[in-house]
Length: 62
Image 1 (spheres, helix red, strand yellow):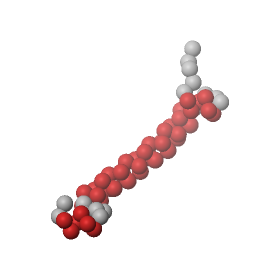
Image 2: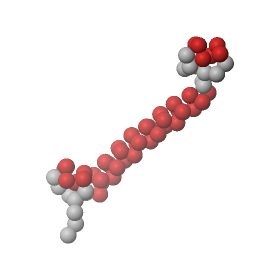
Image 3: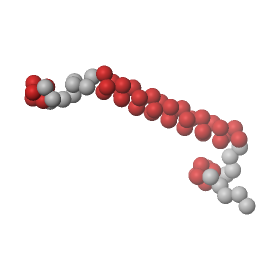
Image 4: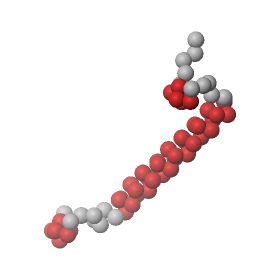
């Protein structure tokens, strides 16, 4: 007995290999974009560390 995956349960039928690859490919692409945005944001905050501090803290030299 084979249990359906969550995607197959939502689709209501057993997926063909081509359908499964298409779904996985789209998900991987969106996760790659999310990871790239996370990395870019981290680099930006490392390069601009004092940009987002309140003016009072910058004057005191914290």
